[in-house]
Length: 297
Length: 171
Image 1 (cartoon, one colour):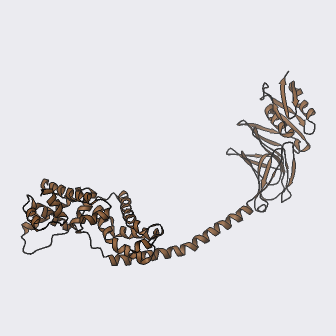
Image 2 (image 1 turned 135 degrees about the horizontal axis):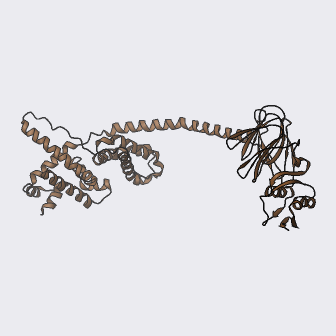
Image 3 (image 1 turned 90 degrees about the vertical axis):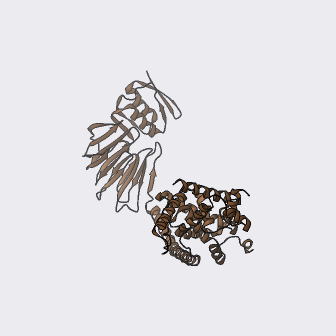
């Protein structure tokens, strides 16, 4: 029998008496035996199966108990979250009023402050929390007559307008952000700046440029009386307003839309209105349904 | 025989028997593979708790494999965490009054060599070899425990012995 086979058999305690004699005569037999005896020193700690089983049962019982009181707790927490969510969705749900193109709307707020919403605009406010917080969110343009009381906030995508009791318009359109104060005082928080407007002051921000304070001597915006008036405004802003008021699409490709326009147009007669914005600039217009094309002469 | 009667091992006596059958083996396996520093006893407990928690999905046939895999993974996680260097405990040689100091010192020296040599074995070699030599397990038993062939066990144990001898001769 070969040496390797003998050793393997010895390792598995399979040697018979005769083989054992052969194994004991092997070269290096002593060394192998010494290793085998030597590793006994590395025996692991004793492992008491019964004791460990008791420990395990205790651990499992403790875990179950933990779960048992955790479960109702989790259920309660979930219920609270859901109730809170429902409560919130009821109280936080704001009232939303929006206007379509060529439509205007008067809104009475809970404290009898009034809002006139210009075309294609929307206003969101929270009726339930009005007593504690007078705040509206505005998209588009509106004229506010605010009753005296706690501070009144108008939030727009561009800036925050804060007042106590006064009359003012806020216009937050793609092309410009404009606040005009008609009575009292208004604070505008915009781009990290805080500006206070007094009666007659206007704040205009257009294409990233703040126009130096201009003033108005009107007592309410002209659009309240169905006229849009402009004072040194880019022609593009005029056209955008026209589109909103008449719900039309205007193409004016070969026209300098940056030139300034001063003038006005009425809201109830499109032909007259078109003439009043084209004649001063020597423009011609072609009207087909809801499409209007402007051309220079 | 009862094995086939049960879909899983959630039944308490079945679980207890399962523990009695494998806890000791799992402990020896983890101890010899990873050393004493990673608390093999705790890992045995944790592994069995995991088995209990998932008992619904574990058939009696799969339970042993699941147990050993979990135990092994628990250890591996710890190794990643701690980067503990594996070291085997060295028991002091029994103090025999009739042995002279020179002999004792030599014995101690030999034991240290052996310790180093054991550390240099692969995990697979070490586990198989120590289960065989210390726990006195037959090759066949080890094969069943580790889910490998008897031939493979034989190879590992013989390889381990050969390597240990070489290492000790060198040192």
